[in-house]
Amino acid sequence: MTSVLVLMGASGVSAETLESALARAYGNNPSLNAQRANVRATDENVARAKSGYRPQVNASADAGRSFTDIHRPGTGGRGDTTERLSPRGFGVEIDQSIFNGFRTVNSVRQAESSVLGARETLNNNEQNTLFDSATAYMNVLRDTAILDLQRNNVEVLDEQLRQTRDRFNVGEVTRTDVAQAESRLAAARSQVSVAESNLRTSIAQYRQVIGVEPRQLAPGRPLDRVLPKSVDAALKVALNEHPAIKASQHGVDVAELQVRIEQGALAPQVGVRGTVAQRYDSQIGGDNILSASVVAQLTVPIYDGGVAYATTRQAKETAGQRRLEADSIRDQVRAAVISSWGQLESARAQIVAAQAQVDASETALNGVREEARVGQRTTLDVLNAQQELLTARVNLITAQRDRVVASYAVAQAMGRLNARSLGLAVNHYTPKLHYDQVKDLWIGLTTPDGR
Image (tube, rainbow, N blue to C red; front, side, top):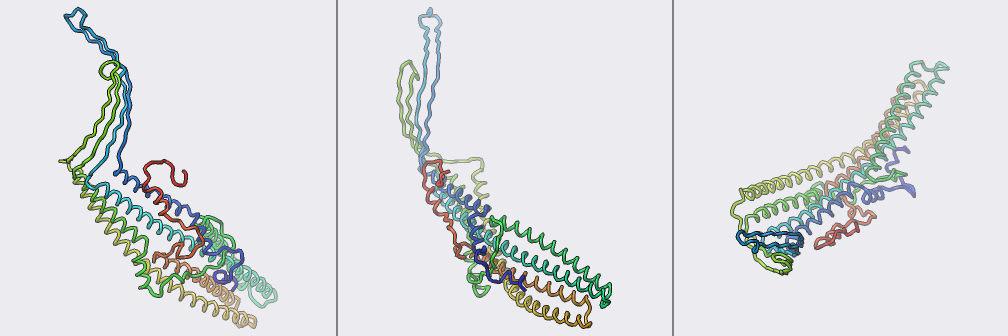
């Protein structure tokens, strides 16, 4: 039974725990860090939208050379003139929007909703990463335990074959018994190869998700402390808290605000333009002209060929699509909660049944061996009893793994599989910190982290 206890036994002092592995994934997983970068990029949309409130300032300068030769007929050349100028100048132009059909207001609100949606998507990505990490951790434990069982089975069958050959040599059994033992040993060695392959695959997945090679993994335990007592309670939490639902709701807000932005194109536009310009040699040699103006501008759109109307209708259809998608995601979350809860209850029952199967198989194997010693059982009976015990132990290991993974699946379906709920010892990522640093920036090319 030592191999079966790998999943549920006591852990070593320096062993990697499931919680520490999840903490590693929280900090190192590239997909999760990429999503964090995406949230930071989305934060900049707020600063971009707020630029609509601010003036647009442009400076210009020019310089050139002009030559004018004027010949007037009938003057005998006395009326001819030649002008060589070096026209040059510089100026500053400032445009300030006063009213643009509330497009800037709605664009800022839309950008803020996009940020909130990106944060919820990040939370959902965190859930998926932690679930994948817990699954990879338990898969390594399961496959390690199964490999130990299969190797131990080879040792047992090898000893069984040796004993059978000894008995054959003294005439107690037939050649058939020897062949049966050889066949089972060959099959067991094949299963060892399969188990080794499965373990290598699980180790690769562990390295991909968590970022390090698995070393001395401690037993994994179910995540019962964050789970409610009933599936109805789990559904209530999921429908109120799941980040995928919240992200879809923010997506609806973004789409509805896009409708208002498109409608704003049909509204009058009011702005102010101020210019200051300094010119030299613009008309006669040596002149110096300074000009300045402030002009209020009113633009009333009459007809643009139907573009604004088409984009508005398109935005309304997109908003309708986002509402339907939000309903679909809500149904998906509901189904995930019910499914994962059922898997959790099934895993609990499977552990009880598998443990009973192991106990019964051990008793049966001991009895068959004793009966075989007095000639009441054949070698095949012993081999079959050993195979049944092996199968029962593998089933128990698999059920123990499924029990832990199912508990994490329920937490994920509820929307509570995150670093704070799990109490992981990590530096929690706070998206609002970067948002507050950039939302009101007027200038600057350097990101808050110095890049």
